[in-house]
Amino acid sequence: MDLVAFTDFVLAWDHRAAAASVKYFFPVFDCSRKGVITPADLYAFFKEIHVMWVAMGEYADLAIYDVVDEILDMIKPKKAPEITREDLIESKQSGQFFQMLADVKQFYDYNYRENNLHQDEDDE
Image (cartoon, rainbow, N blue to C red; front, side):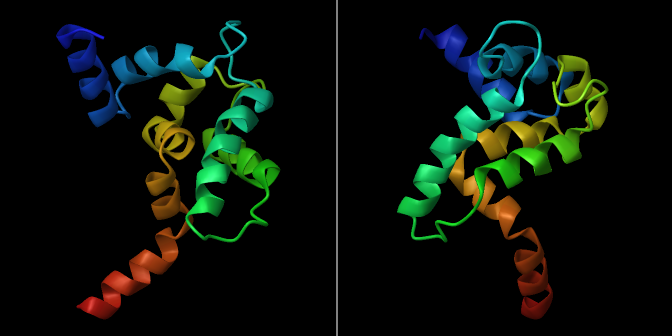
């Protein structure tokens, strides 16, 4: 990866909710190269997050299929269960989508978002 490619990646990751970032990352998650992200694609990516999740000492009974369903509910694809690039942009959830499937720390924060919210309130 050269400097230009690295810069493109960093900008796309830092601005995951932007349409340009969806254009950048969508092909990575579209494993079948058919212009849609399928539940099988979601499962494949989240399965790796789950392995890291369990290695962190979190509960192993987190059901991968439940997370896949939650992602589909979050994006609300027009032709469920397949997610298009347009579905991600229109959902306004592309940043959350990409970080849940690519970063175990970001998934942790998402999964415990309500606890973290209450903890922030307690700190005040």
